[in-house]
Amino acid sequence: MTFTEPQASPLALLVLGRESDPSSERGVECPGELPPASDPQLVARARTARSALGDRAFVLGHHYQRDEVIQFADVTGDSFKLARDAAGRPEAEFIVFCGVHFMAESADILTGGHQQVVLPDLAAGCSMADMAEIGQVLDCWDALEDAGVAGTTVPITYMNSSAAIKGFTGAHGGAVCTSSNAESALRWAFEQGERVLFLPDQHLGRNTAVLSLGLPLSECVLYDPRKPSGGLTSRQLRDARIILWRGHCSVHGRFSAQNVADVRERMPGVTVLVHPECQHEVVTSADLVGSTEFIIRAVETAPAGSSWAVGTELNLVRRLARLHPDKQISFLDKTVCYCSTMNRIDLPHLVRSLESLAAGQVVNRITVDLTVAANARLALDRMLALP
Ligand code: SF4
Image (cartoon, rainbow, N blue to C red; front, side, top):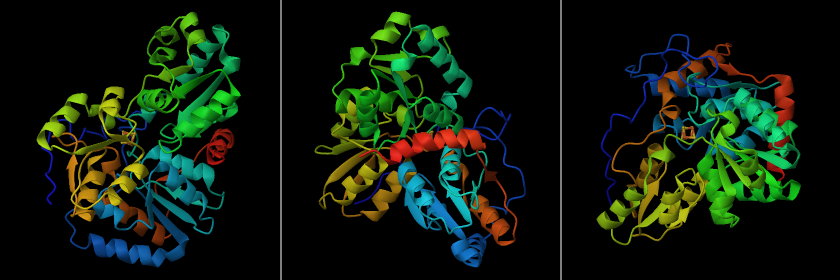
């Protein structure tokens, strides 16, 4: 069965790498000379450099990476699996992280001091992670203190956040979570305190609280970091069971309930499978919801001839369609929906990283301040200890 390519849209890829903002993960230019993308020897060059590095390097590839990059990954996975994989390879001198900035930071936190983490393109950030800055989170905590509820609130931060926010979370008794373990993290947090501050993805927090834990929507409030006290009264903060940060994924946030209705009309009998970073109405109108690893397993184990509409990043959906030609796999939206920052890492950037390392030069190293890293490690270790 054939995969129908979605149509290009003006928002398919956002223009990045301009007007660099040092406080943001986005738009930071990546310095240095790159091999031209037209070089026909790029694949051969990557192979040569990779084999010269041998076991000294460990290449991690997130599922949303391009195929031209994934072919060189020693392991692939979502952010949770890759964090564990990075921590489990202490003998590798270099961790080449083909993913985005917050993932490379987590790898630096979880690996030893003798290991160096490299991000092939420094401009590979995450728009969701940028929606929560540490200064805003400190202001939010002040608002919770003013409302008299900071002592009974447990912060849970999604993996997709800066090291500074993971550090804040660890220092305030909280944990990191991913889309694979958000339910366990929330259950754990409600054993530690009365309410949860969940950041930065409002959709993952709401979908997990309501659909997995059974909390009513009325007990979830939305904290807008651009408004004084998040736009909430002290009473609203006190009454809430879960305070959701106003952040979202620019990729998954684009899917709509109308996309689900349209695909059901186009493909009668289709199973709609979406990621929990999608909006609540998308998740409630889909058939199945789960993390990237869940999505991959669901498609892998589906019977031949079944048809699927998948609401997640396009590189992954296209790869699933290629790997499972016996199933009809369709993209949930009719227009292209890439993660523009994940796509920053391409073969020229990977070649440059591998060749530089093979020549003894570490480019684009990602390091986290030691105090921040120690606190963030607390939050990450609490996550890794979840059942
Ligand atoms: S898919 Fe969304 S959450 Fe993941 S890196 Fe891209 S913008 Fe961030």
